[in-house]
Length: 357
Image 1 (cartoon, rainbow, N blue to C red):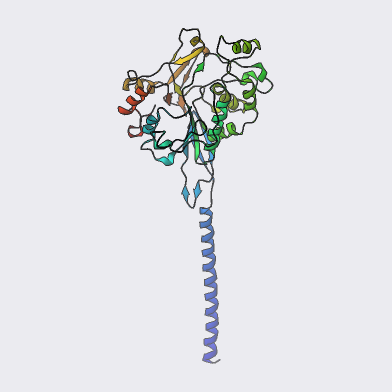
Image 2 (cartoon, helix red, strand yellow; image 1 turned 60 degrees about the horizontal axis):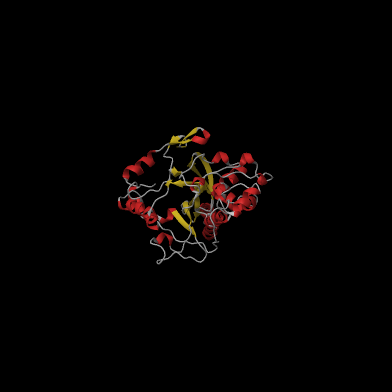
């Protein structure tokens, strides 16, 4: 065998090894590429949130190209027109990372929140474009609340929803109507504050409801003013005074078997005062906080409350989250503009000192 033929055979063998090595490297690169693509794909994670008991909330679409979007709190404002205490909310939001919250406002149709109508940038152009005319004590309030929830649900980052409304009267008595019994059993009838906080799955139930809301719209109506001819006709028909927004969410979630996921207490601190006049004895009137009685001492006492006694039910509700004692209230009402100015001036509210009502 000549030296030339041996050299040629060695070249063929070396070429074969080069092909094997190149193929192996290609396989390795392909495997790494597949792993990288898997980690870049959207994934689903579960976040456990404390709300009296622990609720598992599935957060979808939170990973995009390796970046996680933060879950947010959606603040939903139901206003008559503008927001008289917008400067107070401005102090509340100021200094907080705006990636942590979002703001939605339902006002009268056509009203726009801008530099001329609000003192807080956090409300600029946050009004709904599909708002409706709302009248207190009617189902239009529920419809407006559902519009707020629907708008906030469009942002998948919103996982907590806080509903806040303007000042409205509360009736002393609101009763169940037997006309609802074919859809809403009396044992499922519930009452609560219209200032509420819900998780995303509850908000979806509220927006998608097409059974309970029509019943409320038809049968849950506020009684006309006492002494009027309309009131005489109203009660002659054996109709009951019913304020929709004080019952709807609590009754709906109970109807859906979710009562165990709700707190049996209000989150809003209110001192009630029943006046003695003929008309006013039919309504609850919250004691108003003014400049004089909204100082550090009063606010500190509210924040210390850790239980609530319900006289009509003869029970005491101790406020807990994950079995740990917590302050009962995250809201308080109602405050005059002077009281709000004092809260801001004395630093009793606002992220700078981590103090909230």
